[in-house]
Image (cartoon, rainbow, N blue to C red; front, side, top):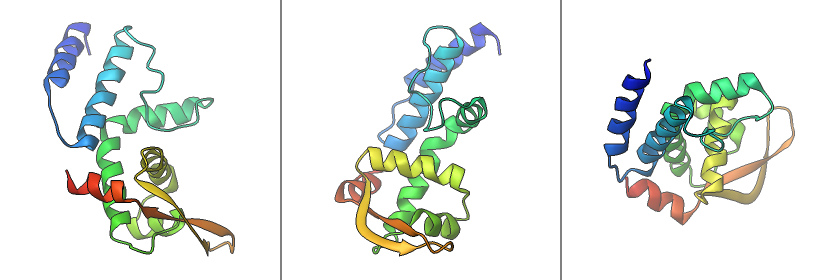
Length: 146
């Protein structure tokens, strides 16, 4: 994509106003990626959670970045439908989502205070204790405001 085209796309993205925090996050991430590509920013902290030391993890984060807000919203909505909470393994299975897609979303939700460790543990298929994640009142409110 030419710099001129990227500049036009960047301007268009900056003009979008959304009350949906997940859409707004996706737009901000796209803006940050474009600005980084145009050499205006380094892009630190603009990608979904990934392993910073890994070039393949970074590439995956860059690829998913435009859809990350939407996927994160789906994870929150899914967790809201389980009042007793879910382990990461349970949520991945019930959503049909791979761990490498699910975990960054759950980490983002945790960082925002939308999900918390419920204090409960359940066994995984490997018979290991796993945290049961539950949605906070702020998480329900965030989803209901969308």
